[in-house]
Image 1 (cartoon, rainbow, N blue to C red):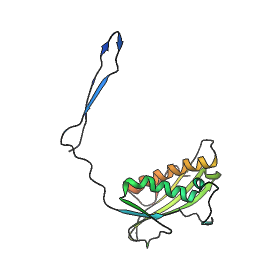
Image 2 (cartoon, rainbow, N blue to C red):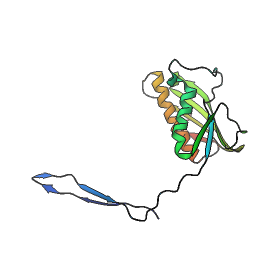
Image 3 (cartoon, helix red, strand yellow):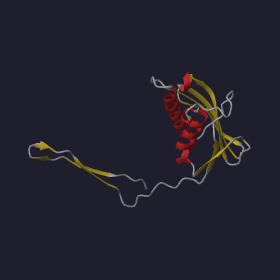
Image 4 (cartoon, rainbow, N blue to C red):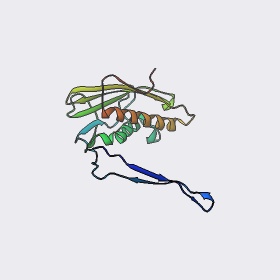
Length: 174
């Protein structure tokens, strides 16, 4: 049974001025909550892969480290889709359960443009892959641009994780 609220609005007039409409929303009795999410665990990297960059590389400010920032954003926005998100140093097709591997393809303009690709495996079987890209158009500092782009990419990847497909293109790609 679908829940449909009943909305009742009235407008009144009092003491020579109009009053704001008063609305009352009633929810039908017998509505059921949405079913609980399936108990599943996602394993992903503690830091996204960035070929050509030393693994211990970090900007002076930890918040500007693209490898950690992007992994944190993906984890944050993917929480509603999984009962648990585990992190590992490395992830591959051999990782048991659902495993997400993300790699930075392009990092330019101090983080103003980031392109990544990723693969999702379920017990060694590839269930999805994607390429995602975003660009910060505002004239902000490099760290702020990185934060903005990372959040957008994290949201797009998390949305894709809800229904993964192969060769998905997330965001404006050129």
